[in-house]
Length: 128
Image (cartoon, rainbow, N blue to C red):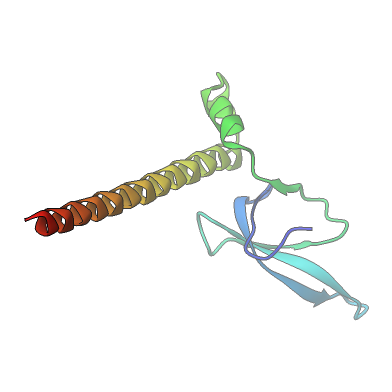
């Protein structure tokens, strides 16, 4: 079972977010849980998919390595827009995550440098 706010792949709309899990009733007044899925590329595109016994393929996203292999495949241009979008999304998110880690590392290094400069200044003042 997928959780709210989880980003997954749906064969009908591609990369999507589980916006909510809602109860909907059928004509017999029986209620069932449904995923409310929204496309990450166009928030106006949505789908209600039963949590149990759905016929639409729902799965976790592919890995970054799988996305890179897929993108480099000879038949990549022949793949569906959903599949190409999934590869692009996974690679983009991976790159964004790496940039954020790099910024955090740079910030940490700047803090260390400032601390060392401050310590050196204090040592110089005490020695004079």
